[in-house]
Amino acid sequence: MPTIRVSAETMQRLERWADPLEDTAESAISKALDAAEKMREDEDRVRVAEKVAKEPHTTPQRDRSQDKCESFIDHLLAIPNVGNDADFERDRSGPRPLDI
Image (cartoon, rainbow, N blue to C red; front, side, top):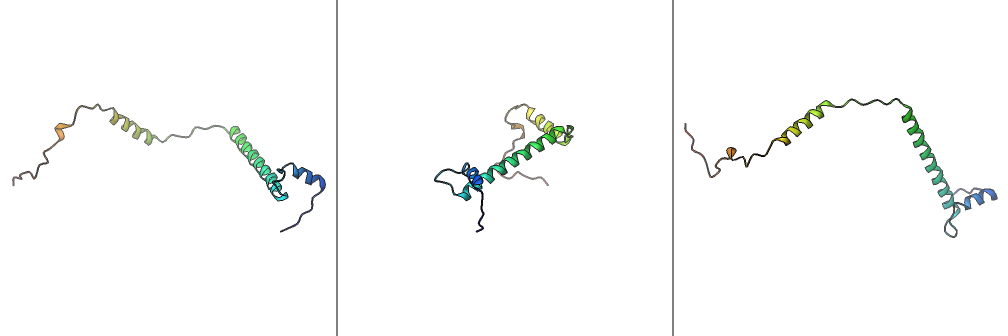
């Protein structure tokens, strides 16, 4: 494991990140690095959001085939219920006679 030397001032700054009687110097450094990385990620997100906001807004073309499919489904769902479809039922009691 590498050994590093820090000034007393840097050690005092590091102690601000540490929880007393809980953190070691390494865990305090990890906390400081985690906070720095999170801040960098947040800044990157803000930069991307600002870039997107500056770009001209274009409306993407819609897929018209989806509209046709939804229209057909809406049409089928709009057909009224007219009964139990008795006109389409057939006797399933056995084989039907066949004339040749």
